[in-house]
Structures are given as C-alpha cells and as structure tokens.
Length: 125
View 1 (cartoon, rainbow, N blue to C red):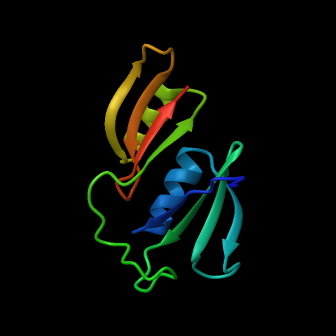
View 2 (cartoon, rainbow, N blue to C red; view 1 turned 60 degrees about the vertical axis):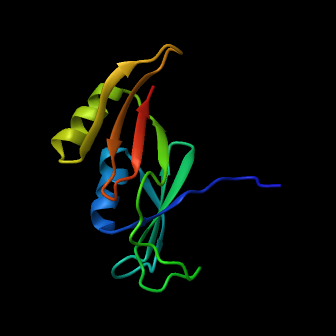
C-alpha cells in the first residue's frame, strides 16, 4: 500500500523551474544532488508537501524519452494564502497566466498558471 505521493517533474530549464517553485510558490530546498555544482535533482518542500525537480535527460533511468511531451500531462493543485497575489506575481514574473482568479461554487478561489514546462498549476485557497 502506498504511503506517500512525491511528484517529480522533468524540467527543460531547471533554474527557471526552481525560480517558479521556490521563489514564486515558496518552496524550501530539502535535498540537492549533487551537493556541489549544477544540480541533477532538487527536492522542495511546499508546506506539508514535497516536489522533485530534475533536468530533462538524454538517457533517463527508466529508458523512456522525456521529450517531446505533448498535451495536458499533469496538473498540480497548490494551496496558497492569497490566490490573487500569487497569480499577479506569476504574471509579473513572466509565467503563463492561464485562467484568472475566480470563486467556485464549492467555495474555493482558484486560478491557473503554467510552469516553465507547460504543466498546469492551479492556485487555490
């Protein structure tokens, strides 16, 4: 039986993705490999959750090509303190604004932004 979900994303530009998840969404680095030099993998804590980021590799461990990926691959739901503020910061920082903040019938405020690799990120409160 599974006891934890740890999403890992393959990033075309790891530094840009780190800026997105660390600086925009407040991720805190919990692990880096290797410890010195350009990272090949970084884990970030986002509140009670974690996400792993690594560069696209020509020869990944699993043997399947990571690019080109097409279509809607994954959608992450990130709980933030202020949806409007996070959305505005993402737009100001040049990240894709997918859907403006809006109230939902179930009582949450949501908006969608795109990360540097085109993954959808739903901001919610």
